[in-house]
Amino acid sequence: MKTLAELQAIKDKMKDKVVLREGFGEKRIVVGMATCGIAAGARPVLNAFVEGINNAGLAGQVSVTQTGCIGICQYEPVVEVFEAGKEKVTYVQMTAEKAAKVIEQHIKNGKVVSEYTYGAK
Image (cartoon, helix red, strand yellow):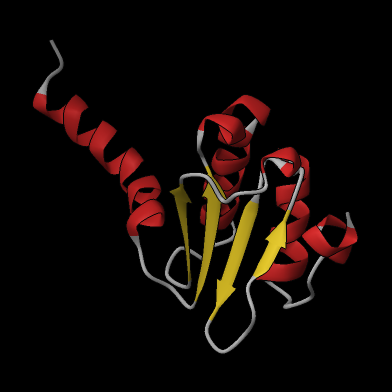
């Protein structure tokens, strides 16, 4: 059995991760987590985005969520980035390493990583 202090420490540690998945921000990252996406490796991609956004201090500006099938299963894992007033960007065949580059270049600096996009495949 955990003590109340231990349970509070676990809650505090996980709070940032929950807020990222449920929060609302200027930008929204959506990871396809249907069976096809999970089988292709979407879970580590989702985790990389959650941790990367949190580590970059962007939790108040960017939310990371998951969705079901996006409809282009052959390109899984698929990630969509939504920004107000801009066309969505669809990244395909994502990995945790690619997620780090998308965070650095697209999310932080506004430059789409075009070689990872649906149109480039």
